[in-house]
Length: 478
Image 1: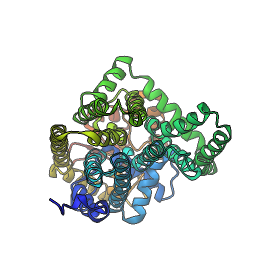
Image 2: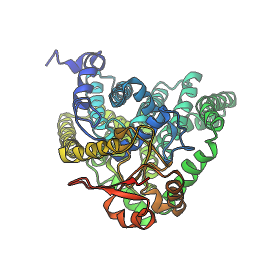
Image 3: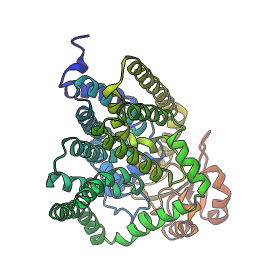
Image 4: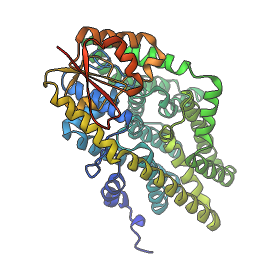
């Protein structure tokens, strides 16, 4: 296979669009799929659509993710709605792939190995990160910082000021997406800074401190300035910092421990990473030039998964921010692998792709289920039929994407209710106060909450019967 495409130095650039579009053709927001997005994606799309219509995040809309996920979706709406978000996903995956290929090549010095390694990890990222997740938004920034760290270690030269500033800016972006993803982003910057302190290079230390401060300021000041100017800074602190701390603090230590081990060991991708990590360590630990890379990568892997496990939850996409670290281990493994080890490695990688490919296909089948999608559109059409475009509506434990499909604005800042309401009772009270005060034209209620709704609003609303619907739809009488 002398002329195999992956042996070409330009392989990612030549084949990237074809592979990206093919792999992402089955994602929820793909223009070829008639799929209603999953819940998190619905929240992000609805929030960004409201922002596009003049609402202010955190002040007018409640959600506890960082501002950059909404900026990502807002840019997608500007480009062309959900198609625009999907195109942005291709772009973000493409940037990540570029840096995966660079870091793998810096380790192996083999174009073929670097291309195949980066192809494998980007397939994993696309399967797990999909097209509209906080993990996907973080990945170009995480892959850049890890790539810069590997380059810095391998060439042994002082880090350029521009790269130090960019690393700090990347850390700030990740911090404003989801804080427990920031471990991988902050680790390279801390390593560069601590190294200069240990070597007593005080002038360089001062320069790096200024660069790191400047990089963070470039991101944080505009965001905080926008929130302060629009009266949303206090709501941002209450939601993103205080509520998230409370949200994670209710999780017990056994749940956190279980989450950590499930992420670290009990997923196919983690087991594969352990295989490559152990293989790379056994092969290269005796070689002095690789000890630092192996040690730092192992420490970064441990601290990253420890931070991810703090939430107490172990959804499969939580593991995506660790993929850049795994990319380094896989590249190190190929560096000195013999023929038998190479065959074992390729079999493991192929098996992992098949396992996650099957999971991705099952997820697509659920999202594209005709019954699920038709019901959403039927409810949206019913709302349109019984209300005017200027009327407000409210959803009580119903899919937030109904706001987008029905083209109606919410009568409350709480576009979804659970799990936040189960964490803080005051939020539920504020939601009902909004309903009493704003008197929405239509209400869509989950069946299990119908009795609770009826006790509060029976006199003001009448039910609209929609055959074979899983939701209860109510219209205000006057």
